[in-house]
Amino acid sequence: MSNNEHGDQALNEASDLIRGYQRGQISRRDFGKGLLGLGLGVGAASAILAACGGDDSSDVATTLAPDGGGDMGGGIKSGGVLREGYNRDVSSHDPITTNWYDPAYSAIYETLVTDDLDGNTVPMFASAWSVSDDGMEYRFEIPEGRVSHSGGPMGAEQVAGLLQTVMDESFIGGVSTVPMVGYSVEGNTVVMKMKNAWLGALNPHKTGYWALANIDTWQAAGGLDPSSTYGTDSADGTGPFTHTEWVPGSHTLVTKWEDYPGSEAPIISNPGPAYLDQIRWTVITEAGQRATQLETGELDSLIGPGYADLERLRNNPDLFTIQHPEWSGYHLVMNRDYPEFFGDVLTRQGLSHALNREAMVNAILFGNGDPTYGPFPISDRQYEPLVEEFNQFDVELAKSKLAEAGWEAGDDGILVRDGTRFEFEYVVEDESVQKLVAEAVAQQFREVGVVANLRVVDRAVWFEEASGEGRDAAPMSLFFWLWPVPLDILVIFSSSETIPVPNFSHVIDDDIEAAIADWRQAGTPEAAQEASSAFQLAWAENLPYLPLMNQYATFVAHNYVKGWQPFVWNLYPLYNDVWLDK
Image (cartoon, rainbow, N blue to C red; front, side):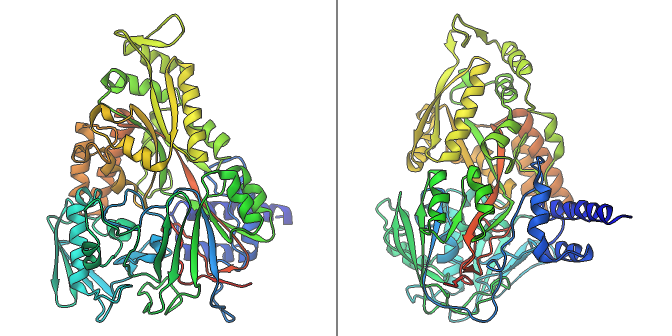
């Protein structure tokens, strides 16, 4: 074999390795061993990844951090403020009442357990966890003497109280914890009892909605009362940083907790208080501004650069880029309380076939994502590829479905049925990528005679309008979801129990309800996969929402940012290991 042939073979094998790693099919450890087995060091990885990007959006072009992403050797410097750009408005810091959680939660709070680099469950606030042989009881050991930021006790009693309140009161907790009986305390142990063995029991406990706040402080600040100041004026968490400022539309600021005892999570190297003095997340909803502020030195790190700027950022020697698949998706909410538009499946299918998802991925995300024909991104371990038999782009089929549903073109080409013109209001959040997606969808609908009148609002208004009951909610809206286990969140969006929010489509679908019931009874990987596949296929055919595409998680930082390691199983970076070498 010639040297050229050998090089091509190595590149092809490396491409397969990368694809498998980015889709979660092989572990980080096996990925590294595979590269070494090909005679390739870590220094060659970014060139290989770039070569694998090409025109195939299933390959994730990634530039690995040269040394900043994971070097925790000698010479660590304490102090300084990490200035991070964020592509959305900032959420309040109340895990029980918030409708979204953002990167500050990874600094202010810990969760009972988390994921390691290979996606395995490991302790975080709890020092250990276990599950009974029958799957009916989980036990979480809480270290003695733990306190929250206020100095208040944060023992098993407070932890169980917080978790029970999430289960009983939060807008996501109730439906997510249906297979659970509740939480109790035995000494220093929090005990979670189950109604039935469920493979997904630990998943919610890794998310920001189960972030460990001090329940005593939360109640004293007002609890569920609309006048509560918890999460806005103050927060009382368990993570390495304390709440300092929350200014919606502008920024969030957190400050080092000097008494932080360190995390139980093996993925965190720093055993004590954070190296940084503060972290400031700046809200930048215009995509182009995010890259510019990073390049001019106004930001140290960035979550979600504009994809039009990504190649330029990758080629900047002063920056490093980390990119991996993201458990997220863009989909269209169709309010069933407007049955004249969205009440029948033929109409929904016609609208779906009018959408060229692959073209939107290429044009809007510059190939940094994948079209979705069902509810899941293709990177998920439970992805059901048979969904790709549905919702393919076909304008003639779209028109045929709409005609079969009874829609006819009026004199101006706009469809009419039973005297109703197919024209409605369409609400989208004021963020660059979402606006581009919404505009592209509206243009494609217009090609088949449907008018979606776009209205751009800020995030708070979006949730107000999408969360209304009946026809108080908008007919259609664009929603971007982000969640580390897709089935958990998509169940919440489509369950009849969560109308009007977060089942924004107000959908009741017997096939989806049956799949949800099976998922909640799934105690084995086989049962979970069967329920997941049934759920995905029912979604793809019946279309409670119109799936569009998902994007790749993208993070960029200056080379002087050390220990900043976004990885595939966490939505946001962890910050206790981060320091600035400048």
